[in-house]
Image 1 (cartoon, one colour):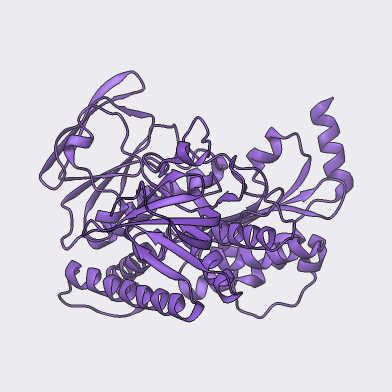
Image 2 (tube, rainbow, N blue to C red):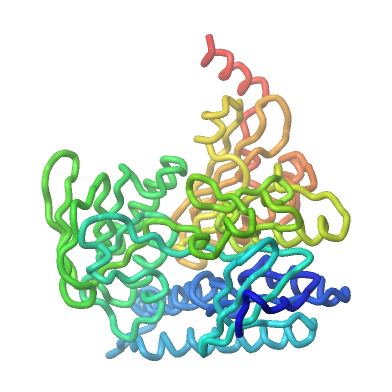
Length: 479
């Protein structure tokens, strides 16, 4: 097919990439009668159901079950020989993914949105050339176009890293054997979640972080709690380490010469996992031909309505620089959907809740202490250890704490942080109070079921210092 002379197929809406935001935009507008097509290169439904969020939580749950086996005597259960069978762990995950893909295909069918499998690139304004795996080429033009190409794991410029064939989360979640000694580059979400899971399956694990502490953008108490958790689980954590080069091949033998606080050291293992950040999938897709500009970091340049520099072209999800969470991508969908249908919604000021699925979990909504201090926002702090929440004692899961930031001169909740069992669920209750604009006293005086984790919000918010004392402290600080 000669695309230069062919007339493109016409659509009301084209979506490049089938991730969270893009697929929902396509399904919703197709149901409203728009002729819609989604172009997807590989993962139907995007990375979340295939290689990221849901598969990782599936594998992490298997690792939690393994940890219960290790602790079984603590619960009065005497065990004999047991072992982790990684092919079965992988099969459980694959079965879930297959079910999710089938669900997506059914939703495409029901919505009327067309799914086009192939690699897409812009060849002109709002015009995309799609090449299928068998070489067939289609030329598509949309009245409106949404770019939803996501990000990929960053393989940094460390000499020898790319040649060592390191695993990313994609390969780590598809292992059929337990790595003898896993080296993990990066102390963020992926690095922390998978380090703990692999340790619980039986790997020796060394986690290498270039900053002076884990999750260095979070409060010191969170970093310290995670460091202590990993130490207790037998994970070696090496902070302030700059890897100078990588030698060997992941899966066989790997050496990482490094500089740590001015002294040289060598870290050795059998497998290497690179978890050092994300790179937007915006190169090689012809954005220049479409009149779509990118930022200096390669993300699609968008305004607060998620509009790009080209008319009637939007960008959503991680490729647009939105916070890297599926739930934020879903909100991107709502923003673009409403704006296409004549409304006015923006990304400005929206809540960004998150949960890291270590065990126990770490979740936060609103301001951390670091953020409040950086912005000069005065606050009152309440903090309790989770051992004070009686539900944790019934579970033998007493590790962690929760804390809340309350505005100095009012009863408004500014932020909530929890490191502990069921953290994501507990955070959601505080988030709902924040959405409703409730004062912290509403949670303090609530009647929560006993014994539940949520009940812990009562002693937490009972511990909020009086506003007068907090103001006096702030004045003393600035005196």
